[in-house]
Length: 430
Ligand SMILES: [Zn+2]
Image (cartoon, rainbow, N blue to C red; front, side, top):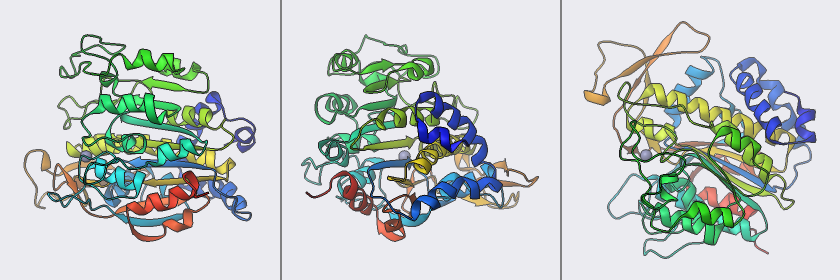
């Protein structure tokens, strides 16, 4: 990695080059020390935090991180997300009269507002009252804001930072609030269906063969036209994204998620129009121009949705995409020591366990059957993934962080604690 080039200029071409370079580097455990060097040099002077990059591996618990580590880094290897300087655990329990285990909406509301709420709530309290969100507060503090995801850009996790609705299903209303209320500068991901009224297919046609249920369904008018009028560059391909001028960018790269989540061999597809690392690099290059700093939310959604389908192959592929995005973020942080980087998951999905290959071990039926074997990088050994559910579980999620305030994440905290730390940067008391 050429850090001098990174320090001089952080534009899209550089970001793309870093994506490629770091993706290789990060998977090579022997290069860990040199990759970490700029951060420890910066630590001596501990600058105040100006920027926050918050990365959600949706559904990513400790076992998924371990499966990813074995597969992508090897028996003695380390993932980029595990090389951050601080680490801790978060509990994820929602405040829901009917549920013990959280969904993504209640979990992201806890991060974005510091309040526990019911499953399905997007930054509203248990009585449905809207709560102040970090995305809106960061904007009010003069920072640039952005969200990047392989889910719909209006899906629960990013939505909780930039909107308020009593029902996570109202994704067209969430899109409307992005344009009318919270105004994130960079919006990149899937979910075109929610930005257009029925009968207006847009760049991604209605009822495609891979999922005939996908079709434009918005009830708030043509929000893409509205975004263009509000000054967004609207892009739908990798090439257009690469060319887009810094500033306000709306990139919609799929009707719904940027993949097809199904069990292995049953129509599962993961070949996004633009990968998460590239979207992250572009977002950083654009948000970085704001002198008062920025707040960027990055999410890999395949880690959750393929775990719902108990599809170990695609979960590991999603982990690789997430790792590339983390590597891009780390490369940025290495030359921008005023940036707090946090990587965590909103909850665990699948009850995933990493096991020895053992034909005599108990095995679930249907999609819960043991899954694998999966390769271990640099080894001729393999491992099995066992699943216990197609839903979420309530185990703690790991959190790792680097940059200013990162040491606050050591120890075990409720997920609302993310808000308590991030607000110090994004919504400081005056
Ligand atoms: Zn889920």
